[in-house]
Image (cartoon, rainbow over the protein chains, first blue to last red):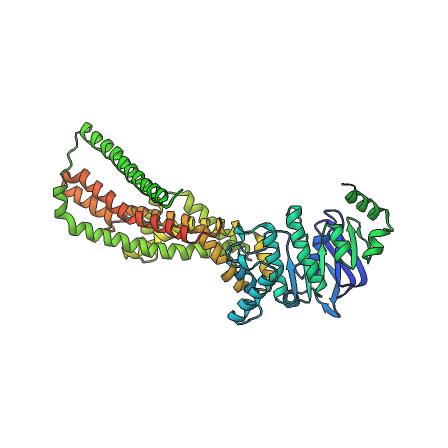
Length: 242
Length: 259
């Protein structure tokens, strides 16, 4: 993916998340790390077209996205978004959750949508869950199904907002393993995560963000192994000290 | 546990159920009988048969008023919910004021006010239509609060997910909001529908000859039937409200997706 930012300004309440940010990032998998309240999720919502930027624009693979509801709603169809938790519709089975966007946003034939969903469920070992409702699934299964729903539409970009923050280590592992497989198979993604291990193993690029804005962006090896700013050094040592 | 154990335990459960209901019946019946004896009241149900046609006519009218009022109050309640979310402030305030006034005043006062003042002013003399309208306006306020609570209980996050998927507003409503809303509000709406049936009895004030008015008329001409008539009346209302609550319980069970 190629993400271009031109004067992108995003405010969240009184906090300035991005202030006339201009840069170009080329990455296959981008991890956004940093302390809570640093605006990571807000930036991801802007990238997903769920939140309008206050000023400036950005482009995905050369396509500039205007901050207008009509443009954004068309843009959202090209993006897969996975939320922190409870990202599935509770009144629909796993299978119906996956086929919903295929049938109702992409007007796919019902049988074809079902076939595609079942194929993906099988591929990730979740075929037994296809008829279960979200409340009958573990948090890890719910997230994996949310990920399947997001990739079933073959998005240009997969966005994940701390997909494991509500999960215990074992379930987190299950989800991160799936994501790693996806990256290896060529799915491009941006993930907000607290798992430095996952960022370092699966992502080629890392962005560090805190309340002062974007601190560092670069190749994972460089940013995580030789952090330039004191802010990032402190953040990494804090996480590694636990 | 063997299959036999399972089966016998389910038979035990059924037996327990039957005995429990029998117990409940005995407790209530003996309480009523002792009360009647102490109050020196004689129940003579044989007189009731004479009035069967009149009871039946009242029963049918109560059913008709209730059914029309349920439908109309549901529509009105939904419109008020939309009104409270309107982009125009005056519509929002109007909807909120309607709910406050209707819920804050007795139905009896509303019946008299709407029928004798508003009804007369606008030339509405058909008692049946007036009764249905008044009851619908009253119940609609409560139903709108039930629906509003249901809508609020569906997290705004679900709407964000729906947006992220690229659903149109119409599809968000039809595929995400509505199915969940219906399941959540069914028990409360059913309770309100039972209230519609019972509240319709107050329409007897404006001489609509529904069940209550029939009973009033019968007891006015034949005072010796006073107590028995009201017992028959109570049973007839129960015959109407009980299925509503059973239906609600059944729907609730059938549509439960959260475990």
